[in-house]
Length: 118
Image 1 (spheres, helix red, strand yellow):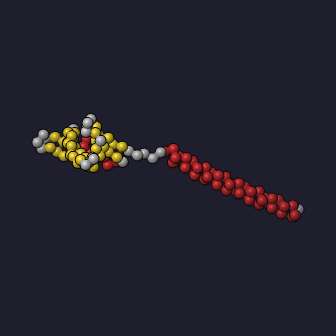
Image 2: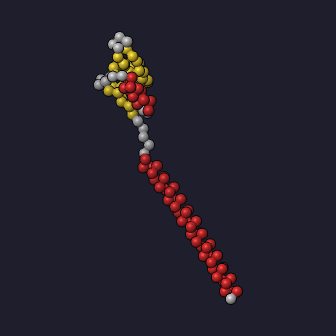
Image 3: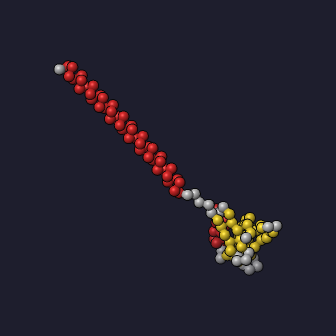
């Protein structure tokens, strides 16, 4: 397996077709390989895949190009969001409980004031 150092889209005027060139580097070896593609859109797709990958390699024995990607695990993020939402809901419930308690105290004070007047 050789590491891919870069990709380039080229138009080959001799064969009048589009190609992609891979700049490869391996154990003391540097090489450039050219592969025909159907058009500039296909070459652009391969270049974007290379740009977005975290690692890329070429297997000269099979001719296989491999782009590897590193994805964040969504489970960890979901758990963090659930904890934050749970904390917000608990804070809201505490605020509502405090407001209810204040209203009860105000009503009790009004009731006592009416009793004194009577």
